[in-house]
Structures are given as structure tokens and as C-alpha cells.
Amino acid sequence: MARKIVAKQNNSKMCLVCGVENECGLKASFYELDTGEVYGEFIPGEEHQSYPDRAHGGAGAAFLDEAMARTIYVKEPESWGVTVTMTLTYRQALPLGEKARAYARITSNTRRFFETEGEVLLPDGKIAIQGKARYYKVPLDSMGDSAFFDSEWFSVPEDLDEREPV
Image (cartoon, rainbow, N blue to C red):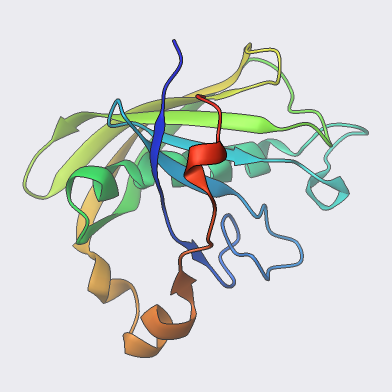
């Protein structure tokens, strides 16, 4: 099923997962889809290696955790998720140098918590990692002071009209 990207979510300066200036970070990008899901992508590099030619499972876990946590931002832009529990099933290793894609969606949403599920796909579409998680909702503005939002949490421009459906 092809999904259309409708918005790009912010990146940060130094986040391990989405930080654009973190030398060892994943430098992942995240998008909102017309289905209400979050889509993410990153290319594992040598700095993310475990065994030769494979990304460390923790890099894949962090990537999927971030995608699932960002789902609340689609429906409640003033909220953010802090991980309470997360379970993962690893099916295949993520190869270095090839784009990994994550899809995540909300399965339950209450006043204080939300639950999600998601998966990380290999370039051929096979599932590498599946996960479920529960997050505590926090106000987005509690994640940092105004200086953080002014200089550390920002939109990286991208022409979404040029993107193919994902």
C-alpha cells in the first residue's frame, strides 16, 4: 500500500536518532503520512556497526522507538512520548549503507498514555524489526526551554511534492 507523505517532522541538533549534527547519530528523518502513521528513514553507517556489514540492534531499536514515540505528535502536536515499555522482535539484521524504513501507528490513546506498534523494513520490504511500546504523554514544551526550541528543534526544509509515495 503506497502512503503519501503529508508533513515532515522536526529534527534536532544533537539527538542520537534525529540529530543532524551528532557525528555518531542516526540522522534519521521522520514524516507524517496520509494514514495518520509516522514514517522514518535512515541509512546505517559504519559508526552504527555491530558485526561486519550489520547495524547494531540497538541502533534499530532506537530508530523504531523514535518513530513510535513520534506518533502522538501527529494527533496531539503539543504532546510528546516518553518510553515506558517497549518489546521488540528482531527478524533480520539491518545492512550497513542501505536505507532502513520505519512505519509506526497508535493502537491506544488515553489522557496520560498511548500505545503504538511499528516495524522497520529492509530495502526489499521484508520486516527486520517489529515492536510495540507504551509511552507516557508529556507536554512538548517540557522537553526543553525556549533556547532549545529556538536553536535545537527545527524543521529541515524538504520539497515533499518531489517525494514518491512510501
